[in-house]
Image (cartoon, rainbow, N blue to C red):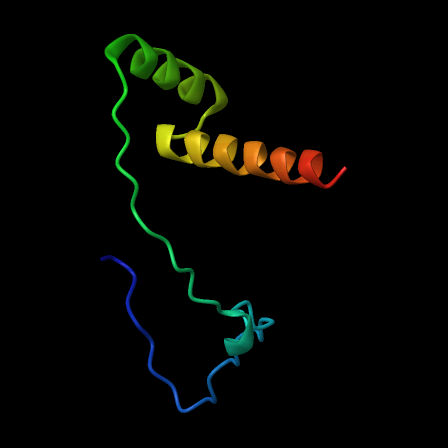
Length: 80
């Protein structure tokens, strides 16, 4: 380092106050998730990888989204 530190008796500059960015403790919710093992054949798995990659998602994320969408559609269909 070429820059020398200059020590003085002057008061330090105060920092910038930032708004609290953390959520409130009540807003933190523990998500209870369980693991599901799913066996897929190679062509299906390859196609799933391609679709997930084209959307910029992981395969698990894409499958989870599809399952939730399908269940939401099934619930609305059954109530009508």
